Image (cartoon, rainbow, N blue to C red; front, side, top):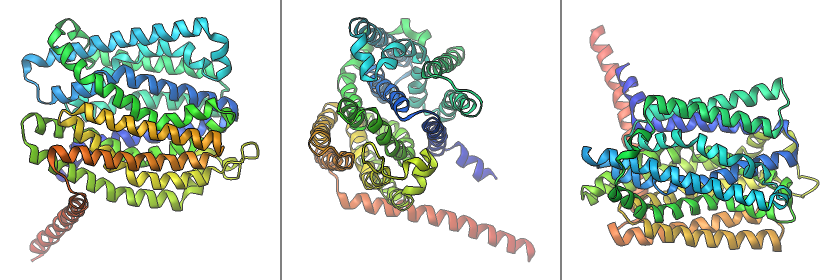
Length: 462
C-alpha cells in the first residue's frame, strides 16, 4: 500500500495522469462537438481553437520556458522577482495581443468574417485576459514541480467545459457564440481560484526588477519563436488548408487525425514536463553528465513506448475514427474525396519520430541554447510550410500534407542531434540502449517486489 501511495505522488505519474485526464476530456468533448455540429460550423470551431492556441504560444512563450529554467535553480532572493517579472511581461503581452486583434477586427471585419476566423477575432481578446492568471499559475507550479496542483487546476478547467459540451449534446443546442461564452465563464472561474490560492504570482508583480525582466526577455526572445514555431508545426496545416480552395470542410476532416495524435502525445507532454526542470537544474549546477543521462533515459524510454502507441494507432485506425467522430467519417468524404482513416495511419508513423525530436529541443533549452533550438524549429517550419503548399495547391491532397509532417520531423531530429551533440556529445545507439535498460530495470523492480512478497508469505506460513 505504501509503495502504491509513493507511485501516486511521483512526479512522472502525476504529470502523466494530469495530461491523460485533460486529453481524455478534450478528445471526448471534440467527439461530441463533431457529432453535434455541421461540418462547416465544426470547421469554424476548430479554427477558433487553433488560432487561440497559436496566439497563446506568443503570449506565454515569452517567459514560460525561461521562468521554468531559472526558477528551477533560483535562490529565495530572486524567486519572487522572477515570478513578478513573469506576471508583468505576461500582462503586457496580453494587452498587446488584445489591441492588435480588436483593431484588425474593426478595420477588416468583413474579410475576417468571410475567412472563418470571425469567432476568434471577436472573443479571443476577452478570453486572453480571463485565462491569464491560471496559465501563469501553471508555469510557476511546473517550475516548482507541483504536479498535483497542476492536475487539480487543469481538471477544473477542462472538466467544467466538458460538462457544458455533454449537457449541450443531450439537452441543448447552443450556438458557437454561446459555447464560447461558456468557455469564457469557465476560464474566469479557474483564474479566480488561482488568484485566491495565490498560485499565479500576480501579487509579486511589484517585485519585478529590470534585471529579472531582462533575464526572462533575453531567454524568451528565442523560446517565443521556438514555441510559436512548434505550434506552427501543428497548426500550419490547418491554417493553409483554411486559406485554400478546400475550405472549412477539409479543416474539419483534417482535425480528426490531428486530434488523435494527441493520444500519442499524452506521455510525451507528461514526461517532457518533468524532464525539462530536471535537465535545467543539472545544467545550471554544471552537471553535464547528468543532463546527458537524462536525455538518453527519457528519449529511449519514450521512443520504445511510441513504437507500441503507433502500432496500436495504425492497426485500430478505423476504430479510433469511429469512436472519435462517428461512422460518417469512416468513408471517403463525397465533397472533398479525402479518407480520414488513411491520414490517421500516416500520422501513426509520424508519431514514432516525436520523442527524439522533442527531447533534442528540450535538451538545447535546458543547456541555455534557446537560439540554437529556435534555428532548428525555423528550418522545420520552412520545410513544413513548403511541403504543405505543394501538397495542397499542387496535388490538392491531405494525404501529402500528412506525409510532409513526417519529412519535417526527420529534418528536426537530424538538426537537433547535430547541434546538441556539439554541446554534450551524443550517440543514437545510447538512446536505444538506455531505453532498453529503463524497461529492464522497471521489469526487475516489479518482479523482485513480487518475489519478495511471495518469500515473505512463505516464511509466515512456515
